[in-house]
Length: 314
View 1 (spheres, one colour):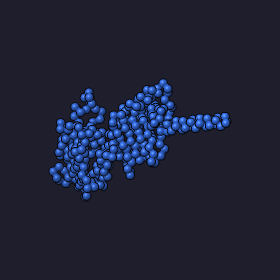
View 2 (view 1 turned 30 degrees about the horizontal axis):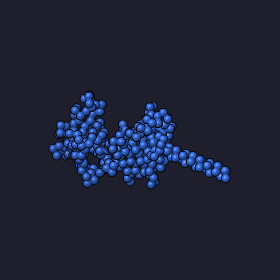
View 3 (view 1 turned 90 degrees about the vertical axis):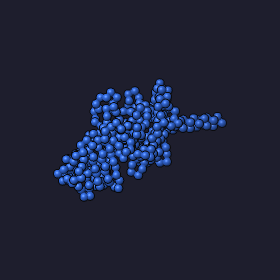
View 4 (view 1 turned 30 degrees about the vertical axis):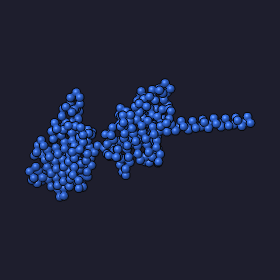
């Protein structure tokens, strides 16, 4: 009888310890190896900002509204796959880390193979080489890192200052048009009207601002049209920028694939520069596409398409 009791007690202790061990091990499994099976990632910060990244047929979309930057989703998926536990949080740091995770941590939900992995991403360690994370419904947080990567992980989740911003995920491409798709293109230069021109592509002809056909350099025309396969903005500024005090510099109209896109570029006045009004390192312009939200574009990117007709002449 006593032997039976001892066996039952030992079995109970073994099962309890085994379950505890399994539970602790599950609390440490932050990574997802099968990244190709991930079809949705949800992120939520403590300020009410939510980001949903959804996998489509051949691209990702953020909040069912914008395409995701390929480099951003590549970095996130690589992070999700490669993160590992560096060490447990020390007893002396435990209370502060738990408080920080509860007040500023960003929740991450990863959906794959009909499963969901949920954890909270917090701040960095003092040496910035580790990141505090807590698995959902777990008691103990851990310090996570990527072997060989020297830095904290929050920015790789699109987190800046414990906050999420949809613009960190948006594809910044303004134009991704193959040259053979372009039917017609017109550039209006409002500073020097004589620089304005129109290119008809089927067949090719170059028209000046007085509607006169001009002899063109075919190589320069083709090179110019090829620029529209990859043109991006620096940042999206939303709809609250007042452009009434800015000067319209260029209007670019592109007809392709039964569509028409109109890009307008404006001055970026001193009052809209950095707070101390010092000259910025990179010259910029405001721009809108089809009268939509305001973008910030860089001169060195768009100067290759905001050109003079002289650069296309024979």
